[in-house]
Image 1: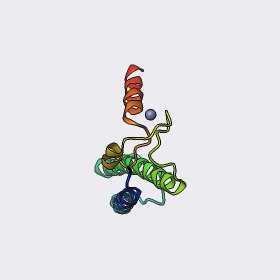
Image 2 (image 1 turned 90 degrees about the horizontal axis):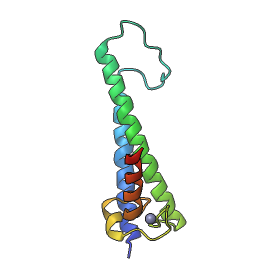
Image 3 (image 1 turned 180 degrees about the horizontal axis):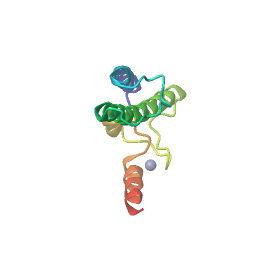
Image 4 (image 1 turned 45 degrees about the vertical axis):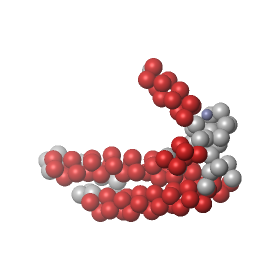
Length: 119
Ligand SMILES: [Zn+2]
């Protein structure tokens, strides 16, 4: 059996961690976060640029994680949590404990990963 309460607590904890990280990241960005469409002028300090690039990459990764976590929370609410999105079978509870945001069962994820490699 899946302990939904426990999973919800874990997922909510992860969400809090990520939003905190995102906030911190934005404050570290050498470019102002409000001005994303900033035009990089020639002669912009390479370190500043690098810092900005780093923040953008990290931010994208965190946002992707956050999306997965939000999706998991929504499923918990809807009562569809723990069902594989590909084959519709229940995802192994142990797997969900380790990776609460998983949307595929191990078998499907392995197949998806394998297909990615074939490209
Ligand atoms: Zn599956």
